[in-house]
Amino acid sequence: MISDMLPGMGPSDPELVKVYDQLIRNDHDGERMARAIRRTFDMLLDGQHTGRFRWDQLHKTEKTHCGTLVEINLQREFDFDDGSLLDYSISGVEVDCKYSQNLAEWMIPPEARGRLLLGLWASDQASRWSAGLVRASEEHLNPGANRDAKRTLNRIGREAIRWLHKDARLQENILLRLPNRDIEAIFNPKSGQQRINELFRRVQQRLISRAVVATVATQEDYMARVRGSKNGARVHLRPEGIVIFGQYQSHVQAAVKLGLPAPGPGEFVAARLARRRLRHQDLPYMELDGAQWVVATADDPVEHAPLLPKT
Image: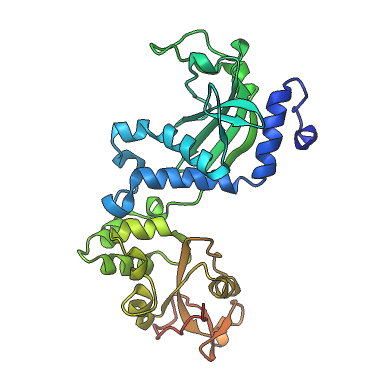
């Protein structure tokens, strides 16, 4: 079994081992769990309709709903069976799903005592997340309970957590990384198209998610604000030397050749380009539109950007 190879993962809890192995087989690198968590944050913020992008912009009731949404999105992602008593049945084992804003501070209800927990934590601000399994046995729980009779893990219980993924990378919400002056410049224009133009003008050589584009545009047709056809940002920014690579294979290959981050599904990366000159000999380059191009340095003059490879 997968778990037999992990330190400290003995056979003392066969059900935990069974669930652990199944989850690792389904999601060895954690990308699927991370996707479900990212989807949860994006659903709560609903940036496309609200323009919100920070946790502290949510209402108290929305924050409370986060754990339920994590549970729902994990079930959608993995197609877990419903449990008879708890949230899921994984490999025939009842499992309760718990989420907390602080690591391992899960509130455990009476019906979950003695059962397995799939506990999760995530921080959009830190772009990190964790998920682990633990049995909510009496020796793992603090004696005190809140008015709903829910209890928390004690020190022994925390040490007993078998982490599936700990402090793993969560797809970044780039708006949380920008200084206030950039946020103000991006959100100030009344036009959604102008806001998108300013986003790609100010955020270059860094991955930008589709959710961020939707938040800045706050329009139903937000993807049209990026495209190179008609009046999208790709058309508006070419005279400034700025190109926007998307998830298409030809775009990803071009971005990597230029030393840029590779856009994944639903991601973009923008960069200002310059024609390759003698001073650029040490920079990665590629041929576009019949000429050799590099990512522009601060000393390079602005020139009309080339067309990107066909998608």
